Length: 163
Image (tube, rainbow, N blue to C red):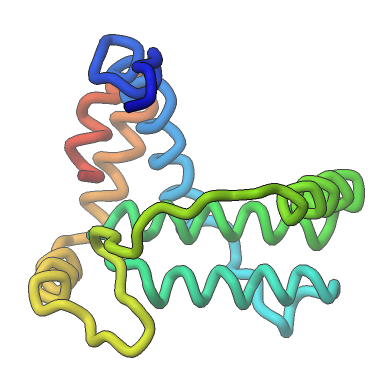
């Protein structure tokens, strides 16, 4: 069994990372998804941007994470795709990162993923029920509550609104 590290055990460091790092990133992703126009093949220029759009669409088609984390993924992908298409400085760095990544000996975990649809699988009924329930929420009220909690730096409330 591998040795325990500060990142592999349930402790205060992981709680801090979740509360002070992960929660704001999820919130930012949701806001970006609402504000930033969706990058498409028709409104972007670069070949690799179009590949990233295809990967985003594939990922979002397979991801069954309950809203709003699904929207956070959309926002984060869209931010990266938009930045890649218009900013060569950052695009080259992502290119080099991916080039190096492809040279690694990445070891994949098992194939069972929670809230993930495998190719050929139908969406799970429980996920569809959750998505329908969320669609019934008044999105204006949710948006206002999220923005107020962000303005007030009440990240615990933000987590409650997005989980």
